[in-house]
Length: 196
Image (tube, rainbow, N blue to C red):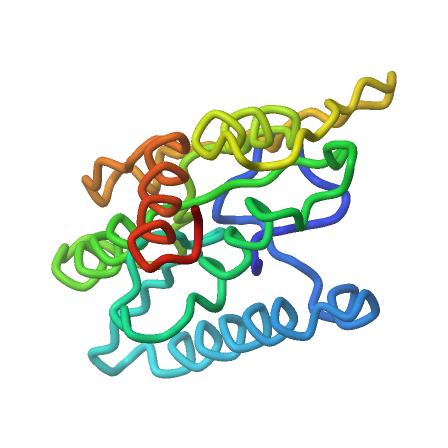
């Protein structure tokens, strides 16, 4: 993500940036590329200020939902979800938080950013952040065949990321809840025969 500063702020908003050098040092080449390309485009648009350019960046978290290509085996984030549901999680929930967005909501935000005359700059494309204890419980509820994952119960349990959604909300897109996103994504995997 291009909005993953370290250390994490109390409340995250669009003014926060990831450090691409830190991302590279952790082997997060995809994240470093996203951050770098966004910085380059933003700087280029600033240089072109006298021209009629509009800059709006939608910064999604993990995007889940129906794929346009239903003939192929799930890959990308849908493939990651399929692995989680079929045994790819550790025995204990990770001591971290995670966030999601539905692919349709992400698309709606892109369209709104293009069509709204006042839209400019960066927009977080995320619903909420949940601790992996909550995510694993949701996944087990959605797909009871998933192996049991013990909740993380140590005293250093992280607090899920908190967001300021004021700017995101100016796009006027109503986003699906995390449970709706995960339920629809799992249903898509079942429809493709990738889950029992």
